[in-house]
Image (cartoon, rainbow, N blue to C red):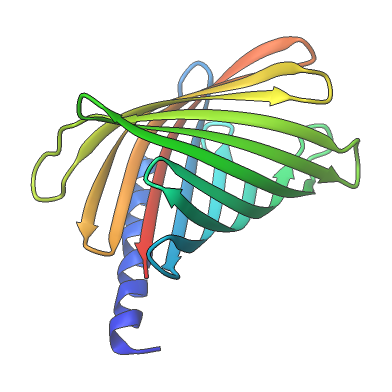
Length: 225
């Protein structure tokens, strides 16, 4: 690995550590407060295609308990400026409250993202179909739709750009809408090949017929190769 590549990796690691430390100072709310940290590496193959590697950690119960971890690897292809298609595989480990142990999930998923611009606002409409394989419960199909809207304003040399997004989760086994996520955040460009996001997420989930909320402070860094 060359000096330039090692330098990029070191910078990414330092920035992610700083974002985690910043996240940890926020206080607990009436609903469960959580902290999610995501790191992404994108490797460009050619003008139209790329490979992405993602790792995410989540902390719940007043951000005091590590309860979720996933790896995701995927390939994306830009059909044109309006449509991107992708194939991914995600390995998930999540701690289940019923027994306090981490359980594994295998989750291949397909993605189709529609992209367009309206009066300067950048809109991405991502459609995702997931197959969720478990060893401890029935497998399931799930559809997710996430609409992301980036505002047409950028501030300072870091190109800080506000955005909002909303994502719905539909269990296709029972045709049941059981989760919604609303995002509000800022994206920024630290260096040419290093980007970051910090966001607030309100997650509303249904379990056993009861809806519960989680307030999430999230950070993401993205390293481009």
